[in-house]
Image (cartoon, rainbow, N blue to C red):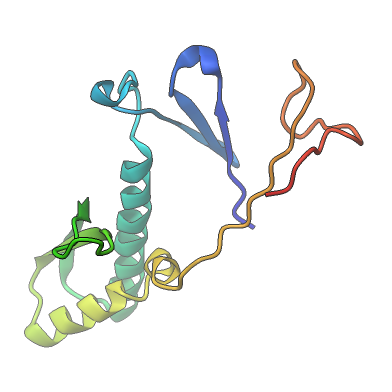
Length: 156
């Protein structure tokens, strides 16, 4: 359905090429985390996915309802919130601020805020998604996807 290939050459540090269909981009870590800051960090990509999905979902609704909206901005941040009590669980918190330009009534604002919660990425993040991991080992020089019968050594 939504297949993505992420490739990292260890000779290039943390610089990572991400390919999905005909599109590609570079991810990297910031310099202070050992990268070269040549692309967004993994958390910035996560926030970008939520922000883009939010804006697109709102745009679809705005177009369908012909609302007088002239712009949509979504500002996101990610924070790890330390527990107040010793032994408590650290909370991973995403803050999403949606800025709508246009002549929007209070009723429209409330509806747009609700519609934002219906974007597919938002729903996925709230659904306790399950990540199924599989580790495939290939011989040196082989490219991903070119495995031989005994090259799958481990399933995690």
